[in-house]
Length: 154
Image 1 (cartoon, rainbow, N blue to C red):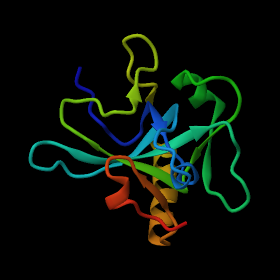
Image 2: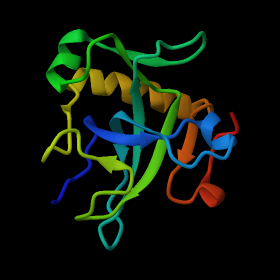
Image 3: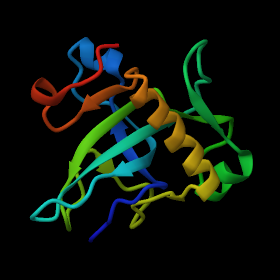
Image 4: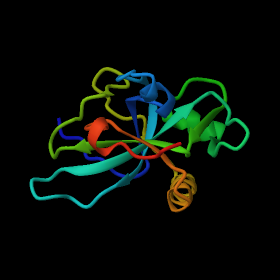
């Protein structure tokens, strides 16, 4: 099955937090994640993809996040309870054309996505991630080559 990454798409992914990576953990927790950015396609068709985690844990003081409106959570089929898209950390992976990357798993039998974020919500998330990147405070975990391309000293 071909699944194309696009900004706003919500998938299930084993998101790894920077704190976990620092302790030597290599796999994260399967959770809904929003694709925030995809790079231009390289020769051969692969793209870099940035994902933000969606979690029930509210943002701590100084942490950036966008609250997911209940109607959007319901539309996506997320479980009950308030959810936030954390925008201060991203996972980066390489998405090869025509392949589903390691770490992406089905959300239900035969279903690979939760759906799309509404455009306005997706834009709000992107802008917070962009601002963190411009401030050089975005915490990035590179899931394809952590020892070579890991960024973010936070």
